[in-house]
Amino acid sequence: MRNPVVCVHGLGYIGLPTAAMFADSGYHTLGYDTDSGHRGLIASGRVPYDEPGLSNIVERVVADGDLEVIDGVEPADYHIVCVPTPFIEDSQYTDLQYVKAAGEAIAGVLQPGDTVILESTVPPGTTQRVLRPLLEESGISAGKEFSLAFSPETVLPGNILSELRENERLVGSVGKEVPAEIIALYESFVEGEIRTTNATTAEFVKLIQNAYRDTNIAFANETAKLAREHGINSREAIRLANNHPRVEILSPGPGVGGHCLPIDPLFLNHNNNDRADLIETARAVNDSMSSFVSEILVDALGSLEETKLTILGVAYKGGVDDTRYSPGLAIVEHINRTVNEVTISATDPRVQDPKIPIIPFDEAIEGADAIILVTDHPEYEDLNPDTVGAAMSQRVLVDTRAMLDRERWQSAGFTVEQI
Ligand code: SAJ
Image (cartoon, rainbow, N blue to C red; front, side, top):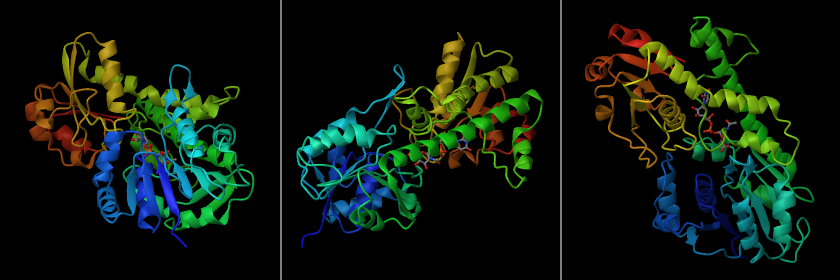
């Protein structure tokens, strides 16, 4: 009997590591992406973004022929869909065009006995109501002649490979119990528990996990705002509060970025009566952190007119090069919109971003009136306040992550503000 073939549709942040795991676990894996440049890069064993450990495994599975990049969708025993599902700000709707395109392409090659699994984050009901009818255009029925399921990824960027292996996996099927071959497929690399449910519940679970984290970060951010009103150190207050056995407040910061938390919670409002009140308010609190940073700067500098400000970090969090929904970029945008004459430089050791110029650290801090540490990159832990201060016009530090030693920077003559 031949080895089963897995085809992964979409070779992005989730699809590529997932394809690499299947290939590494003995499945002959086909990888398809609509972007030909992306395909070419991966076909030569390279990875288009920074993720620890991923380059090694991709290079190996491509060289061994276990991961084969294809130029068009081909028949396979398992089709795994990992395409983007962006949020359309204007209509507040999830854009399902890539899921639909993948469904139509798979319908053209689908055979009885095949399995289709959607992994992209989607509004509840998408697998059943959007993907299923497209696949059934092939003339065969989901849950009878082919298997259809939704299985959310839950991996943390920066730690994707170990979380793909170690996290629990949820699989929700359409029509009947989750077939044993889907469980066996994920068991080939997942060490965590594999739990089963129906597809719509699995879609909902993924969204409430991200909404839960976003809402909890909003609580931490609101705590930081309230603490400032009372002249209290928010970090000390949160540390003390967390000594309670049932309290675990997260860390306040410059806002919530990335491709998941800023948008996934809003998918819960898709096709319903806008019931996500707390979740929407939490989103607004997190989005308001850019104006809070600006207020802190005004407190420290008097006015931002004719100042030079430096943003340290535009990646959405430490250790990654991803700038989607970046708090650093949101702060730049907010200040540029609200202040007439201001010069803002941005630097980041990991990002080459075409959205705004990213310049080297030394150049960025030259003559600055204030530096704003936005991204908790490990590279910033060892900054020397004397060297940094010597290059600046005024010694003001806004440390939105509270990661630098306040006393050390104060001793070097800095006004230090934390969130
Ligand atoms: N952040 C804070 N304070 C905190 C924790 C995070 O301000 O205490 C900020 C980060 O700096 C960042 C943002 O929140 O800007 C999101 O970072 P994150 O590390 O919390 O999460 P993501 O977006 O990198 O990944 C999330 C994860 N979801 C959950 O933890 C519930 C991950 O497991 C998901 O797989 C991922 O979304 C996804 O793909 O959905």
